[in-house]
Length: 125
Image (tube, rainbow, N blue to C red; front, side):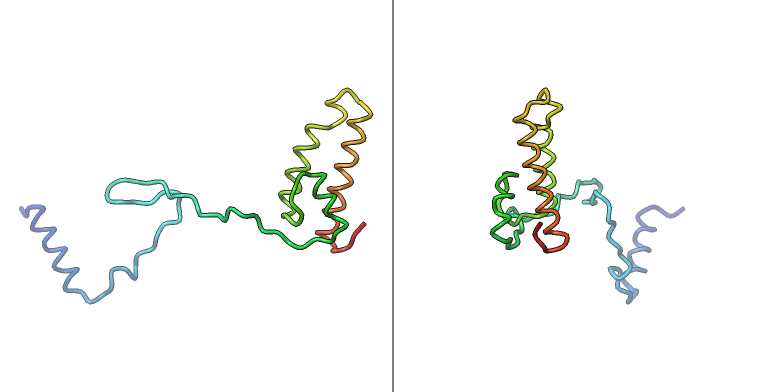
């Protein structure tokens, strides 16, 4: 009966005597974990840039970005997130149908719609 060490030695000898590159057949897995030795480690999250990408916008839209509380030229997804947050805060149904809440929510909606239309078509409303 061969010991495990003899079998391991035979495997190593066969592998070292072979001219094939062992790393050619290696395929890294694309999961959320990586292996290090006998343990599984979480992959670190991808590095994202801290500064948002901004585009140049017409001067007519600068005020609309200010209404949403954003810097001019941020992405449409950031505009949508800010619009949702502001509408949750200032919606007339949450503020007992007050006239001021209606006026504010109308201004927020108009600003967001102008920005959204500009991102889709490149034209101003």
